[in-house]
Image (cartoon, rainbow, N blue to C red; front, top):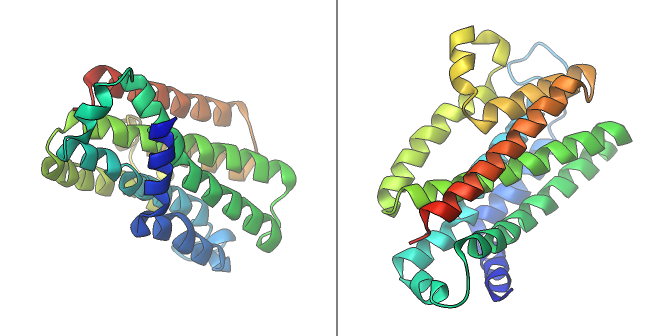
Length: 230
């Protein structure tokens, strides 16, 4: 639990993570047009922009692991009776705490400002928690794949830029072949789940999208634990 303690402290000392996790989402919740149906480009896109912020906010939360690898602190940590899975899982909990608090704030503001029902608030909160977990574990796996932080940053920036198209634009405007390509990314599945939840509620299709994001989480975490952290 020592790893968890210091990882938590590190998470709440990161100004970029705090900005992405709290300040910007709260500001987005205040723009009514983002949460209502309309003819504008960003009408009803607030749900998707929050998911995009979670995806981008997950990476600075995991920067501490990159720093530990660069400074060789990870060598001392792994010389103790600590498995790679333990190291990753405790860092996962630490990264999820600010994201979970963000989700609580968003759901509370949604219920107060935008009249979300209790049922809708529960399901969208659950969806955001699962997507946030998938985003953090994706960053873990990415950091383990790219041992050099510079290469990792460049490749991740390109990947996230590509992934944001799914969250900034409706899925329906993309050709089917492009949507099939997007299916390899968790962003496609949260966009699909949000479409279904907003239009029809927690249907079977919504449940399938949630389950697939949970599968992504397990794959990313297992990959990181097998690949090694240093």
